[in-house]
Length: 430
Image 1 (cartoon, rainbow, N blue to C red):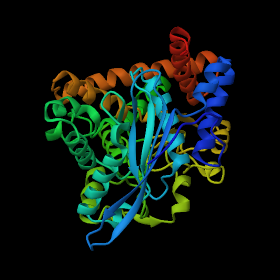
Image 2 (image 1 turned 45 degrees about the vertical axis):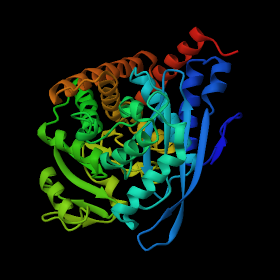
Image 3 (image 1 turned 180 degrees about the horizontal axis):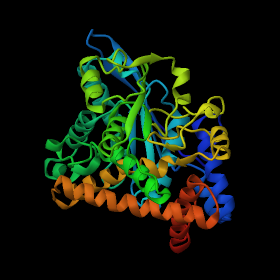
């Protein structure tokens, strides 16, 4: 295992890392952030890179590289997802870990930010191979994660089953008498393994709620409004599910396989059933035409929900966007250059650290239940989630108006100010 502790500012790199640093710098300049606290928040606390062998189904051994970056824990244990994707690297983990710090701070949670994953394409491995990879990765991370230290959760291409494997592996390394006290080492678990009701839909429901709250503020009726969704995984599906229940119409979807559109509308539930029978792909869905991926963001619609990967809306395609609201279900889907174009066009953006924070809030509820030996009902979880999301949205919306800034800048200001207050009150050791 290689353990790296950052002592200098994260180097700038084109992509998500550059975006998050520019977003941070912009907000920090506005609030004239204490220069010493700024130095602390500009760097990650710890970075772990682990290389580990796993035996494949054919008997061959393959070496995998896994990452875990812990950005800041001034407000509480590190918290953040693990993703399995070919784009996972140290810079992506750094950027995503920083976003998690701002997200948990903005939501008022007692957490810091972390992120990580394994650089692989999970579609190339069997379920048994993925289980062995996950368990070996957990073992390699060892005591660098823990229920009061760093709490992973699902992210891109990981799910409750992945979390159950991590939980079981981690608990098996503890003495029998301590195992039940480590149930909250991960969140997003299956219900039977200590998971929480509602955690599956928390992120997507939070995306929907922020759209609803925005519509209330702008006096917009969501009925018959057209929306398009990039990414039809857990987040995209649930956001679309609740938008459709509100009367909005899904007219296009893009996933890793391609793009489809139908002016009259696409049934969210019928598309979900179709993807389950079609190896997860939306292509070929009846009554929908196939589009070139490059045409997707330029479609005529009212609301655009990017719920896939980072850097999807760029300076190259931002001018094509016709939606008047972008709700960021993914982490970092809009790059800084694109945002400047969109804001000049008068397009509102609900930023990721607010829009998709329902997931980490849902994770917090699961963590609390595990710690306290409680089990909450679904309606209780959803009511608590809505209350927390409304509070965050209202503070961001009002701060944006008061300071005459966009919603992302307002969200960053609120998140950074909470961290600054913590450092001012506690001081810096020694």
